[in-house]
Amino acid sequence: MPVCETSCFLLPLRRVARNRSSEIEGRLSGSKPLRLIHSNMSALSGQVQTVLGPIEPDQLGVTMTHEHLTMTFECCYSTPAPGDETVAQAPIQMKNLFWLNQNPYSSHENLLLVQETDAVREELHEYRKAGGRTIVENTTQGISRDLPCLRQLAIDTGVHIIGGAGFYVDATHSEATRKMTVEKLTDIIVSEVLHGADGTGIRCGVIGEIGCSWPLTDSEVKVLKATAHAQTKLGCPAIIHPGRNPAAPFEIVRILQEAGGDISKTVMSHLDRTIFDNGELLEFANLGSYLEYDLFGTEMLNYALYLDVDMPSDSQRVKTLAFLVQEGYEDNILIAHDVHTKNRLTKYGGHGYSHILKNIVPKMLVRGISQTHIDKILIDNPKRWLTFK
Ligand SMILES: CCC(=O)NCCS(=O)(=O)O
Image 1 (cartoon, rainbow, N blue to C red):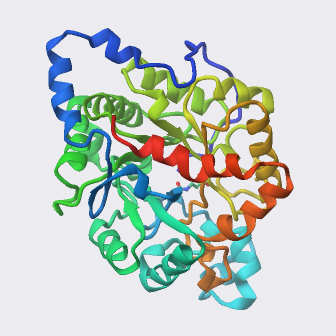
Image 2: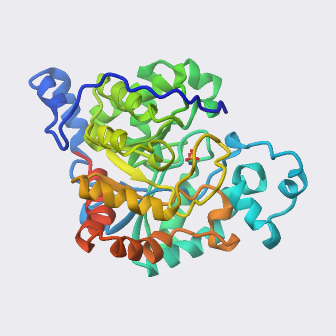
Image 3: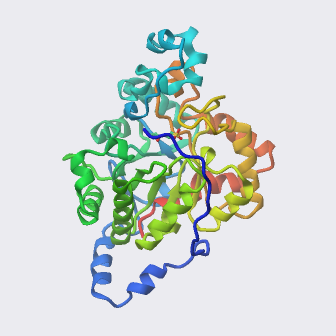
């Protein structure tokens, strides 16, 4: 996995008004493709697609928009620091937990969330008790997406689960994927939403998380263009994992826009570890995507995947949310934990899927974010994003 570069530049971008009416539709108005587009969009229009089938948007309730329930993350394994080899290879145990939380990507065992379905099931029951109703499960091709497992978890727990179409970062693309044209990639993504993914018949309800490295690779650029094309055909939500550089989200939005994507139905994930300057954040917010702070519960001194970054604490995340609300972006904010390794589960002393509901919401109230704004962030914004046009 290439470590990110540090140069920060802002690419020239066409500004878009927030919640702008779709200029794409205007541009296509009256053309033959538009009728085709509308016939594709009509089947799911006004609905949300879960792994158990379409539901009404009002059924979603409190929603975490970026989690993983089963996946592998070996693509991001980081060699342990000299002297840490023994602890890195030891089974996960109480005396290793502090080290593990600081070095989550240096233990092979920790990268196998796929082995913890029973613990995840228990956590989802807990999530429901805490008031949670829906989870967007962002696992895409390359990190062991398992839609039948998601469907079973939805049946067992009553949590609405929404699966993700498309591809994770280039390091996980197969040679066959890298050789595909944008058209072929588009067909695959569209099919994962309309017909089901991985030969299961289980349909995805969002595109993403679409993985991007820094700098973007050729294959990732093709997948981004395919995401935009599929989104145009389907009127569906999309969610992006940006590369680890402040310029990455800007470049991605430009590529999506130029390919006809709908930025107002697109989430930029992981802003916690990507944009740090408030001025730059407002400049990005002005482009009109959803702004996702999805690493709640992650507190680490050294962020192994990009050592230049000081990973913010939860307190700092809440402060940034308060800033965005104060600046008028409350309709664009989404939050989650992005659980993707074992140490994040309560079974291993982690925060689990209910940390936001149990601990962060009270902290938001203390820091002046009103209940009305919290409801927007947890209910209204996810609902608007997830509803097919
Ligand atoms: C698959 C999970 C994932 O991509 N999480 C993001 C990790 S990080 O890039 O924010 O460190």
